[in-house]
Length: 120
Image (cartoon, rainbow, N blue to C red; front, side):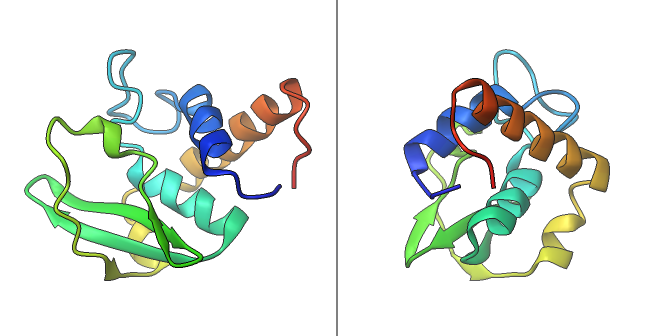
């Protein structure tokens, strides 16, 4: 799977569900998805895991080829004041279960198969 951020964003929006984060709603698809999403993006495309502390807890996202990608920023009403603190998978895994990660991985692969995109 090649890294096309627009395609990744479209696929994630279709893959997110209550099974991938308990805060998910039909009105806020990205709610609670930051941990599981940053983990899967890191797994598929490498790069760095980053976080920014927020009042509700740490917010996780990625840096790939030197650029920040926050595929779940739409969950917030206000822009995030990014701190880009380096972190690791163990830290991000504190907010996502293995089942949620497996569910997101499977849903993303299913979307890519339906859209004719090769999966990794």
